[in-house]
Image (cartoon, rainbow, N blue to C red; front, side, top):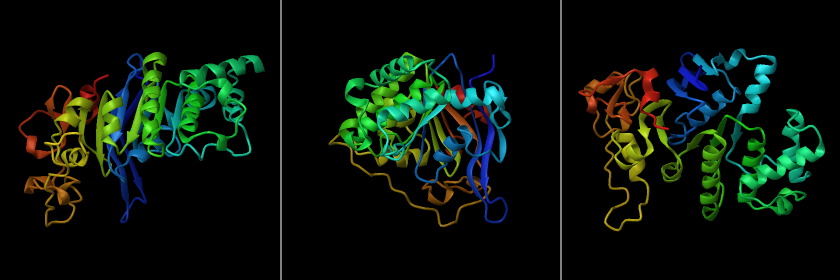
Length: 331
């Protein structure tokens, strides 16, 4: 049985040639249908997180490599297979306001996918599915249906977006910074809603964020990207509690922990005098541990059963093949 999703040595290069930008560099991982999970893809702006989401949704095509859904290249899907892919791979984006047309009620946003994919045979069944989806994300249908977007809070709108995706009964949900524009008091509710979808509905979630705090509370596993490459990956507990790559350590050190004995921002980042080495480690010019060997690209070194880092500090550890990355991502 083919995995639900496979990224096989996927790269995305914009403007190939002299002024090219490598947005994603030789990424491989796998999601299994029988093992729904929450995988966080983390990193700062420009790390390749959103490019990964756009590739997975089929909005753009990979420059190199393949993205397989149930064993078939998503670029080659046609007819019923493409419709099924569009139905089963859904997304919730950062802005809970942009999705809504202010001239339509909430009902319209939920009715469009029902009608487009023929999910209900009549209006009564459609209403039942809308009610079920809204209830699943913690909303009262009687209080939500019939209302206009301006009558709802940002948290309510974002949960309605999740309900819209849930109506489709997706296999994969891409959540791209879903709580970054929502009040802090509502973030926990939305994160809890995503966890319920994963556990109760068997949806695998790719949670894209720059916020390691929310990643720690929601995810099973994590990949940390920097300039399109995986710097560190593994179980979320291992990576965030004991980060090994200098870049991950920098990210974790920027988190304001509720611990009076732990200083915030105590990592000294002394950049190398050399510029970025095109064929070397992408973090070379910012790394306080930069060595001559870093001028060639490091592989992924396995540190623990559920932790790997792309850093020559661990060159004595066994090297993990790129396509074996999924073996260190727990579910």
